[in-house]
Length: 205
Image (cartoon, rainbow, N blue to C red):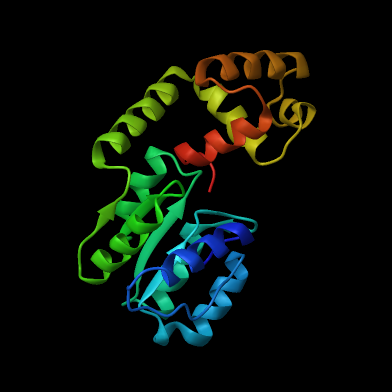
């Protein structure tokens, strides 16, 4: 299990312990670095990886890449509260075996893991919700100008308004005006929400 939130890891452990699913949790990691280290050492002993998407030092995609190298036969299920429709579609296209929201019920968790181990892929929110989310993300992206997408990417990478202005050779006032327009178009109210949006639509990874 790769998950940086202790309470979530505890919830998964308790959920698995309360089911009759024949499984053993053989390791836990809180970061991409810890996960990759574990995969290198114990990848041949793994049948399934339960993976959060947003991690302190990267994303689930980094862990998936390492898993393909060190335990290519292991099933991969992403359990995330942050990934939006576009990212979910990208993950499914990359060959993961399942995706679930962190709102999943304990009984559904065991059913999904059991189903995945029997060879079925699973998208917990249902294809309709993912398609709806992808459409909303694409509608927002289509409403943005190329300059606005540049500013979102730079802002999400930690640059201040002045740094962005210097990078793009425009004034700080112009950057702030662009950000105001971006916030209105995509429906966010803060830089932190803007960063999450950038993650959801795949502008940053």
